[in-house]
Length: 419
Picture 1 (cartoon, one colour):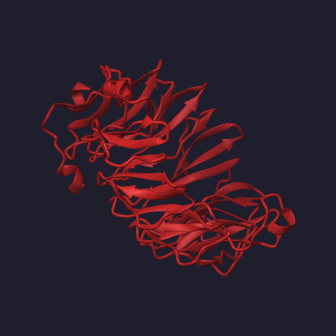
Picture 2 (cartoon, one colour):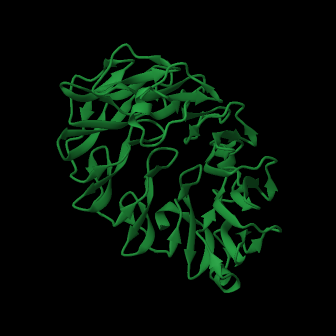
Picture 3 (cartoon, rainbow, N blue to C red):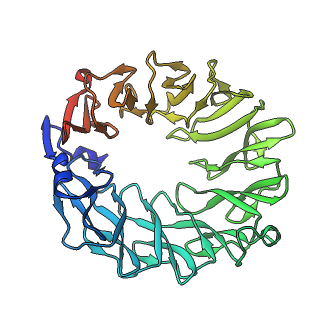
């Protein structure tokens, strides 16, 4: 919040860069990235074969590389990329490379404030995670996830503790997979692992695990729930108590379970994507009341309207009193709020964004090959060649619009009622 308050909310329009001109200067211009505050736009450009370099607001970095991928702005506005030089990869933050180099790096991950940066690393056929340039002390035969704690200080991954070929079913049956947190593996091993997540304080980690065919449960810091199920999906922690809730499949169908005990008295064809409200008082999830029909369940009460194609993750308003989700029916996307859909539909939609006072919803949408901003179902007056998610001002009266129009990248501040 403090960071957003410091942004420029007064200048109506800034033309940051003529990005169409970049394509006249460089043979290759890759995908654009923009900073959260809209003040910077960047892309990887190629000067010539095997000479790639980040370009930011039209200016290239001093050093070139054989390859650069990916390229992203951190939440605090630093430009970060992975780069290959002399057959070695490393991470570069605002032109300063990490000291260590690797055979490969991937899964670039940021903490919410941008102070912590993590990637998966591979070196000498060993796998792990590097956090702010410090590698895990322990390495593994495989580590392919980067899960970061909310404060960014801890990392976790599903790891393989024994070398097993990809198609060696008998080898995997020996349970060679576990979770490593900060490079320290759990003692318990599993047939399969997914959905690793940290508690809000970063003190614990949980995951869905497979114990044997048709026997699944949740593991918290390596300790199993006493109950087992026909299947489970990704767990989440309850904010105030540190308890864990997950979708579970029983003989009666799918429901939500807290620490292994069902908390709903209804069962469904499917349950997934559970989310707590910001204060932790309410929980919502995607449910299928019948096969092929989807809706949202909030605290045990499902929306009356169902959808045939898909329902995306529920998103709570900041005050916890409203729930919105992208829904898809008859191959068209729209947004449903508390069970009621917008009148307009689109070719594609991005996550709904609430104003800080929870009264307004905005989203990026695509229609007929053009991008636009939608506010409470009302399509904006302008469409764009490229567009990034809008951002509400702290008082909710303005939107930061980051867009490419006519070959130029603009940063605009627009009153919500003028969108």
